[in-house]
Image (cartoon, rainbow, N blue to C red):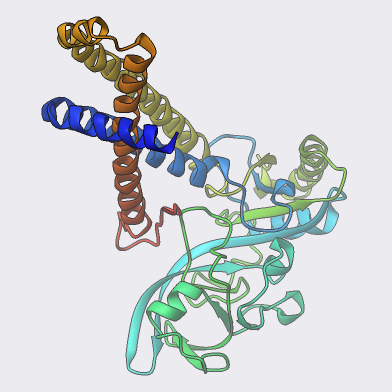
Length: 372
């Protein structure tokens, strides 16, 4: 049996070598179809299908306004939602800022996340080095001068300094203590925006003003919540909107306050619907490309078989069975398919690796979290 397979493989390679143009076109066609679909599905999986790499991600939701495109909340509203709700085991707040970070003689422009003290506890992350900060580290404005570095920033900018925990760095010329390093797999809860470090939200190195913690009109942070076991998103939304109605009656500046739950990962719902619609559209386009590849291959093989009609008739006349001829034709198709699949795999792996290291906007911490 093995000898027969070897002989069939040799015959297939010999026949294909006589039709190099056909073989090359067929292999490239298969490689294009497979490679394009692997890349598109990998991006779709990374941005839409794959859950966040945290414990029980199905219970995590962003709390945004009912009005689409209006996702941010104020810090006082966050505190009221956190203290008065009965449907979330925890609510955390976060926002993205940019600043300068100096350590020794080196200075860097960094994008970082200001997060509430319970953020790491709520998402369930564990530090790679040192520790994370917690709610009991916060005691009012600018009371927690600590930061936690991302693994990527620690390795790429600070040469994976093993003594980094406990060191003082300057952020916008204000001293902060590095208390920990996040694990390499943790980049926060936004799929494509990876901060260089995290700090307690009560700090204000960007000098936004003293009113951030008390002004209900400053809608500039996102709220992230973890549902209690057995609670549905609809129940939690009703609970928060009941609180919102109370707040609107007590605080005229909160007119219009409302709550809607969306899955996290795409900065609340700011990029959620557009990104999902775009990626699904691209996936449908990739499937159409794959369908076109299949039709094209069928046409190529049909044309080649037609051109070999005289050869196949002679082989039948001299005693070859139809099964032998079919087996040889299938062997040729298998060789072409394997070669095209291998080339498509190499192509997609190369492109995915390039996407993983691609920085479309060098000034922003945008990453495409795909892997080859």
